[in-house]
Image 1: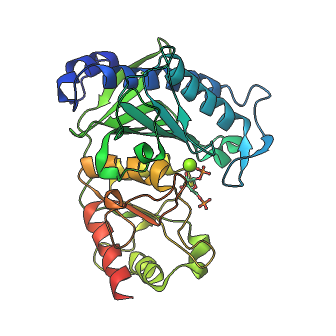
Image 2: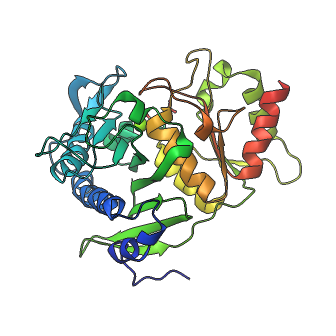
Length: 334
Ligand code: AHM
Ligand code: MG
């Protein structure tokens, strides 16, 4: 039963001992993300009321059109983390390169780097569909006190010390893991406090929901086409239900709660799919694995992939353990 009285702030303090190196730095870092998420939430919720909707007229590094709220969210997270000098480096899906935080003393001793997708699913903003923020935290590999390097960011997902997402939905929630299970907190907007609403989240081993952009079917590899047909076949507990919001955080959040698989495969149009290994797949893989599920590129565990570049894309299959394993079986046998 959910402990509705426990706040995220109290939970962070109580669980600080679980953190890999409990100097309080990671707690402060999660606290800052919590704060920035409130600011972004406020802006997202009033998006329909003010002239903040629509294209910003700029393109991000991936060549995609940025929305004003993408820019706002990006700045809110970067500013919050930078001003508090809580991390030594930040990489954002919206920025070309990584940001080095040298600190006022020019000798930043902080240990952590953050990788963030500040507003994922932003094409949904204009139509009032839920969007999200995804974050991933690593301990730097180069010595403290020196400027961060690319090496600090290009770490495999297994090195993550924490990861989470914020969903700006019918309620705003923060869901995160520090490698000791997954917990979800719901914002009470009246008083601006997050409460522990979903303790110890576990994804069912099996599910009945498959989430994929089926409009791309013709371009999918044979293994994916075969798996989709399997989902639709009338046999045993199938056909499964198809649910695709097109907003990764929302699709994964629903599948964690109800059981299901999300996949964004490669296609003849996009040889590595669409989703980014560092900003989207690794953090989601960490959360879903911690909830008892699985995440793979169709063949290999996502979190064991050695990244080669910041904005690398990867095919993604993520969700209930047995469903992901079944999809992998189809990929292997195609
Ligand atoms: P974004 O980072 O540009 O918002 O793209 C990521 C989003 C995911 O949230 C979503 O699952 C996917 O793109 C949807 O893509 P598509 O419209 O091709 O199905
Ligand atoms: Mg994204």
